Image (cartoon, rainbow, N blue to C red; front, side, top):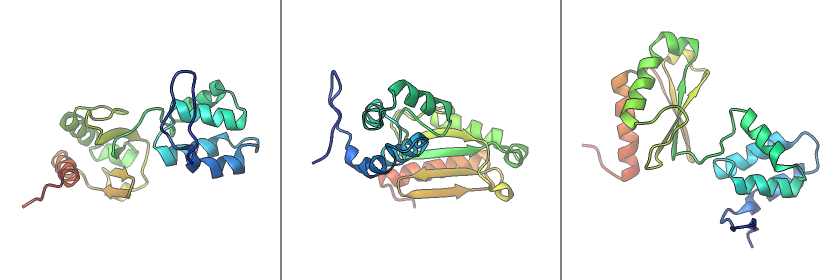
Length: 176
């Protein structure tokens, strides 16, 4: 049976049994909080308040300390992300090759800024320091539950076309 966390006011539907093996292995190991948080985020997509409280309960680490770590490191998210996480490279090569124009096109087309998610929950936009694909600059990586895809040599037009194709594939539309 799935273990659910009962808080003072509500009960969550988040299934913490998926996190149990990680907690069994690391809960009592000093310095393992980041590993636990990374695994929790991998499982649930973000660190919910309920997950943080559950980790606190199982590790004995105060929720305030967990929040402190989760908010200090940029890798952690406290809000759900869209089905497609758009990581827009802002490294030197991408910057020199027009990443700002590509990012502007994405923001305008989707109506979101860095760190925001579209109202329909399909896309979340994140600016990242470097994706390590400098020869393909400017670059965008799209992460989903199924994996990730990298798109290079982007222009304002090509990135809008890619986003439209992703959205069409999600809705089951067939392109002629």
